[in-house]
Length: 212
Image (cartoon, rainbow, N blue to C red; front, side, top):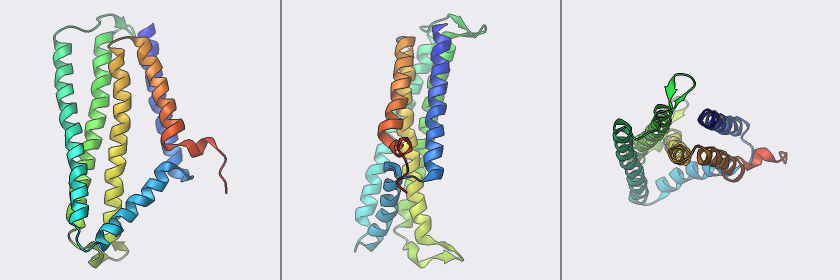
């Protein structure tokens, strides 16, 4: 029973977080994320105003190295977990009348790791594209209302958004790994991580009245 409660709690926490994420995105209330979005767009402008774009390219290179490090670490962890499951070290207790606890545990962890990997890979892709765009003088190019500079800005914002989602996934991955230790730890960590992200990271403005 405790394992069923644990996975249900985790799913509810994930759903709650993304509901707040969606509300913050469509309402555009004052929040840390929305301020950062403006800074990211301005960063592209500032790099293009520099005498040399090499400073921007170097910053993007450091960002790409961070993404690559996360991707490598997650792939190694994924391999270790598959080996751990194949070795029969996980709990074989049946839950939901048909599934073993170990299968649900390893599946949950793999899903979260895959989510992180997809976002870090997409972030790496957009960052690589931006490094080419800012060296190609995007201000010179436009088709009708689609301006090159705005394409470059959206590319950087997309890279940062995928990075942010990947990092948020890492928080929840920690919770799923704790499930291997104890289901109570899994429940507590899932709730605490969700509250922390909602209350203190991206969405604090949703908890207060709009000043306008």
